[in-house]
Image (cartoon, rainbow, N blue to C red; front, side):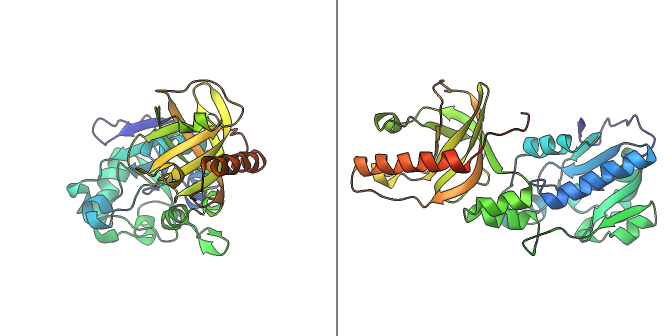
Length: 308
């Protein structure tokens, strides 16, 4: 998949394409339906499918105090788009100029002149341009438009807002259903206090690459993707009250693993919530509970099978 940042210097090799447009934060089932239909539409008409997205959430510029935490990083979103078969993604900087661009200008300058869009696939609540004045019906005056219905999960409309709500509450199973895959976070392995090693369960500590969405405090069954391979992981998020407390941390015990990962990039996926973060009367009680968490992880987590 070709990724082009900004419109400057964009000189598409195609004469026409099927385009889909949106913030695409998280690439949940709704986004996947749009992208998959755009890819299928492009194949039917023998033209490439292209996603037009933005380098940040529009609210970061329009109303910063309401800017939501990103579900995934831009790199993660683009990786998911690539897996869905898009030919290209154009990432537009969303700045003050873009925030006030009128809908008809967006169609002409971005979709027609820059992207060479000839067809479009949009969602049922699609809006674009200043104050979301542009609609699917308006776009249909310029090109054929396929408008998809909303996607439901357990009777709830799938949206990035609902995904965030589930993750913030620790309901990672709900998030998985809406995303179609486990929610994951990325970071770098850093040195910790090595208390897990003393308990017989050496853990890795994850420093996030950037501030973004993190599941609620608690213990989770999931997996780890590393440069050296993948493993099931019992993941703990919180302030570690059983060992004196401290700053919020993300730790993981990788099952059946003995390789050092210090300084390496790591991705942690969350498949099931096991329990709340707890205090314990002594380290023996903590060790016993960790053992139970590890065994539960062995039955509830699976090894990731997606390519890195």
